[in-house]
Length: 146
Image 1 (tube, rainbow, N blue to C red):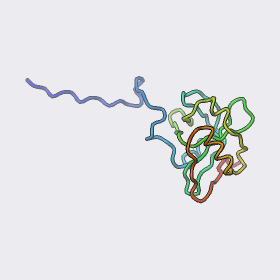
Image 2: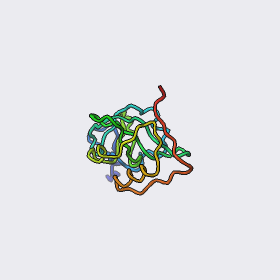
Image 3: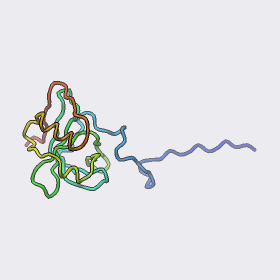
Image 4: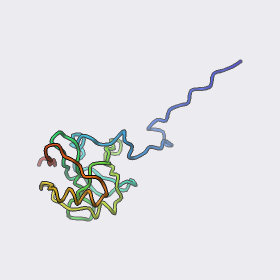
């Protein structure tokens, strides 16, 4: 008797052997509005190591995420990091960055309440070796309301 081949089972996120790409394009943050619930939440580097918390972010007028303000553990100032590549990890309630802790710790500093200017944007992009973002109509700063 010829039996059909069994249907291969899909991997489930709850499977302990499930290998997920921590920074896959399918889960990247595009629109900054998803970050509203993650202000003051944990941030991890590209290796999954906890490095600090999300203090603020800068978005384009149309809502695209451009930069993150990261309060690195053991540092007084906020480090500015490009918004991509990064992702929200709902399961672990954290933000995953696509950069190493060494690069994040040495990133340009800026108080969250200050506007990013062209010089800082250029410095951040140069530091991380990425192309400069082209905001559409300017940047907007967002932090937790006191």
